[in-house]
Image (cartoon, rainbow, N blue to C red; front, side, top):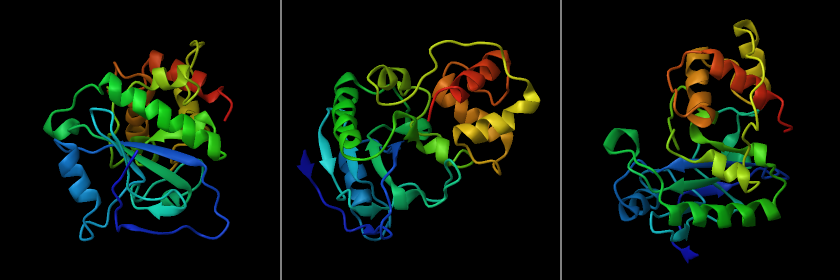
Length: 223
């Protein structure tokens, strides 16, 4: 763990439990560029941790403090996402400048960090989510190349074990809201975010049978 403290943080509300982890990608070419941005007081953005592609973990904001990483968002009825979450940035160029798979050493470092975080806070695997999950109209990260199934196998996220019958289209808003997504966001945006997470080979925003079956299966996973 390398300390590289950012000035961009504030206090959490009194008695606010930390019960979410939000995973991001930096959308920048290098860790150096990302650190410069996350530690620049003029940007007003930060995260608690940044993980470089070589696996180096930087601590930018102490967990007791509120980092500025999620912006406007929603998860399971809560909109005060920064107040209650820990933000982890994964160095990756992102969709706009060269999105690519996350290296093995970077994923190993993330798993170690997540195990440590979840051991210290009341955060269930179902509440380790992506930036696109909490902000489906604005964000794409960490994206369809991120290996959520791997994290689930390690008990650090969720993934459906099997698919059953596809949910009727009319049931999708209710099921997606119950999973955690914003009921006020456009349904196509929410479906796209869900696909990036759980149906990464089919990111279309269209609720085909596979997507509807996956939504039904994720809905059944205990929160």
